[in-house]
Structure formats: C-alpha cells, structure tokens
Image (cartoon, rainbow, N blue to C red; front, top):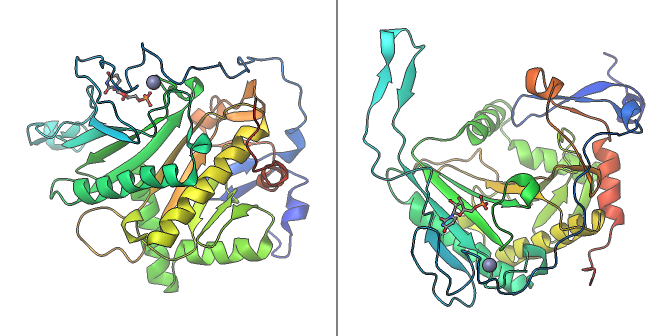
Length: 353
Ligand code: H2U
Ligand code: ZN
C-alpha cells in the first residue's frame, strides 16, 4: 500500500483500520453509509419515569428480589449483587481432562457489586450534577482500592449498561463492579499490546496515540484540563467513544482532587452530547480499563474508558453485530471522523422535555 495515501482518500473506498490496543482490524465501508433500511425499528421515546417507583428493586427503602431491604439512601448506594456471577467461596481447582489442553477449566473466585448512582429513579449520570457524579467516582475509587487490595482479586471491572437495548434490567441509574482472580479477555489483550509497545518504543501507547489525535483533531469530541473524549480511529460501534486521561496514570486511584472532578465534568458533557444526538437517553455499555490489581507495577497501563452505544442513525435504528461481524470481523459504514463531527455538532446543554 502506498505510504502517502491520506485518510481522506481512503475514506472514499472500503478499507480496514487497526486497533493497536487489541490487534483487531475493523472494515470501514464509507460507500455504504446511505443504504436504505427496512429492518427492525426500535421504540423511540424515552418513557416518562417517576422519581420514585414502589416496584423498583433499587429505589431507597424498597425490598430487593432476594429479600434484603435498601436503606433510605440520599446519595449513592452500594451492595453485593444478590445474583452474583462471581462468588468469593468458589472451590479452588483446575482440570485438563485427557491432558491434551482441549478440555480445560479452572475455578474463578470473585465478587460482584451494584452501585446506585442516585436515589432518584429517573436520574441518569448526565442529569446528575458534577458534584453528584463526583460522589459516584469516589465509590468507584474506594471499590477499586478495597476489592483490589485482596490477594485473590487481580482485576476490577467497573461498568454501566444503560437502556433496555443493552440488556439493563432496570432504568434506575446504576452500574456494576465485577472483581475477579484473573484478568478478563479484553483488558488482557490491551495489557499485552501496551506492554509490547512500551518495550519496543520506550513510550506509552495511549500517550503517543493521544498526542497524534490532539494534532489531527478530526476525531476529537470534547475535552477539559485532564480528559479527552474522542472517536477512536478504529471505532467499531457507530458512535463509539474513548475517554482518555491526559496524564499517564494507570488507574482511578491515581486521580487527584482536580482530575477526579474533571472526570465527572467530561462524563456529564459526553453523555449529554450522546443524549442530544438522537433526542433519546442513548443506550450504551461503558466501562473503565485500568491496571490490574495484582500488586505489580504497571507502567504500560494508561487509564481510559470505552463507550459502546449500539444506535446507528436514529433513535430507532441500531447497529447489529451479526453475520460478517460474528463470523469474520467488525465492519462499519459511517466513518469515525463523520461520527466525531456529529458528536461535536450536538450541544452539551441538557434538553429539557
Ligand atoms: P443490570 O440491570 O445492569 O443488568 O444490573 C442489575 C443487577 O442487579 C443485576 O446484575 C442485580 C442483578 O443481578 N440485582 C440484585 O442484585 N438484586 C435485586 O433485587 C435485583 C437485581
Ligand atoms: Zn428506582
């Protein structure tokens, strides 16, 4: 391939882009962006929710599904998931049935927690004040510290699934924290890439990437003194965003008072833009990727978050990761540069409905 081919020239034809964090390629087909759609159309309007729902298992004072009662909490509320996917008392052991490395399994210990972001049933992260979001971040920091200090916990995954489309079971604003013994697939791939880059280039992969994106500006969405939100060059989901710390810090524990508040600020601004994009509370899965809690130094790790919203061109048309994606590899039509421009165009002011 010619080395002086510009992205602008590439963008007129099908091409593929490399995700240096995972080693995966994404196929980009800009020429398909205008194709007609006669498939599934999702419900659009946000339901009007009350600030308290007597049937909600996350609202203050209510009883949860397994019988425990929530306190009358006023800010955030954290509890161990009543139906946890990981348990601290799983019996240890491993098998390699037949000894050929083909029937392999091992025990996995851990714990799962649920964090309610607000007592208000109809709030969202974007509708909370910066100070209220800061309280959520303080819970994330405290949990990363506490869970990570256990010798049996080597990775802490903080995430939020928002919206029915993403499988969230309840509109009450909440996120989850899953902590376990081994490093799960996605952060393990990112760790290997960041480590290999550091060893080869003697520099941080994401520091170098951020510098290039800051110069190019075509994929930037918004920024403040400590964080940048951008559509990565290799984005798979139409409006995928990566949130990067400007400082090279491995985890949220390293956030100072100013950068913690800056994280709250950028979260509010980014999610408000998302909500204004299609005039609907945008469904997404988001989560932080940060250093494992294995008590080893991790100079390769650079704190960041990924946002994966499934919507494609309106509140009612979603992107499906099926067919070619399931069997071959990820593909997108609208370019990351166009998606970033759309996200830059929308307001950071909350629409009042
Ligand atoms: P999602 O809606 O994002 O799936 O998360 C809700 C979590 O809350 C889910 O993991 C837990 C579910 O197991 N849960 C409880 O721990 N107690 C309950 O009473 C209901 C739901
Ligand atoms: Zn509720």
